[in-house]
Length: 354
Image (cartoon, rainbow, N blue to C red; front, side, top):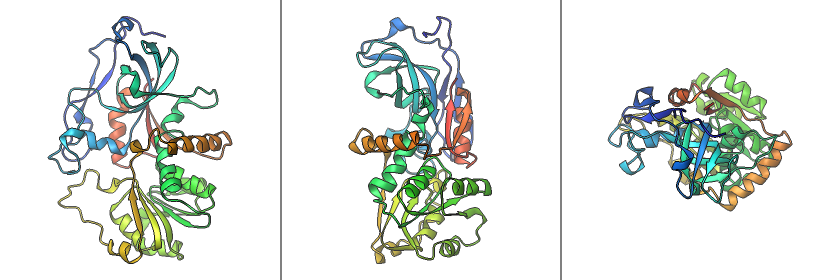
């Protein structure tokens, strides 16, 4: 259904860059001054998309941090422009089209969906999604989207997981970690998770982990890992970095794989005051392979095709559980991002716009 001529397009604007971590919503503003674009305003190759839901992810900090701020890892070329709607991975429905690739009613996903109710989008930036009655559109931001594909890349494609190996998964209740836990278990691995509360620990256990360590309740994480995994770690899936990575390194077996997915422990930290990882020498003596990965570099590849085939079957068979931390309304997006960095989320954070 096309919007009425009087419809207002709510937008979340990036008004300033964050210099000391994303700990406040003050760098965003809410704008309700512009009407929705008319269908007649579309150019060839453009579609009008009604946003259904937006993904809130750790990597967004790269785009909203001041380059001279405390983060020290971004550059002006990576920054999102001030005065423009924030953007992230999102899904929506085409309500008008001047593209031969899309028609009204198509469900689409974009990695740069603007944080606004309606958007005029170039067709080459969109992916058409399957429309299945038993697969909610929200699934393409989670269990069939970026978090699950990241998990698959790490544990299957890059990690080359083998049955009977032992994997330690940091942030086991997180968007990526919960899929790593389940995929590893399905492929016959011995799975140990890390989580930061009793509630999250119970959840990771419920989705198949053989054991879970509440790292916030440990005085000595190295000792706790040794107690639970006396045989040592064959694969470590890291989304946290910092002291947790350090403790995991001390428990690695020889010739194993470390998959680097994120570094949540240092997001917002002053790099000049942050201690580096101390146990890297163990990677040399044990001939460990450590590899980072970026989802976007694998999007559209054969890896993603294989992921979608396997994960779709697992979802249809009811073998995968996925916990979503759903926020309601577009205006909740800034606080959802702040909560993510504060560790107040439980599961994959999405903002349902409607």
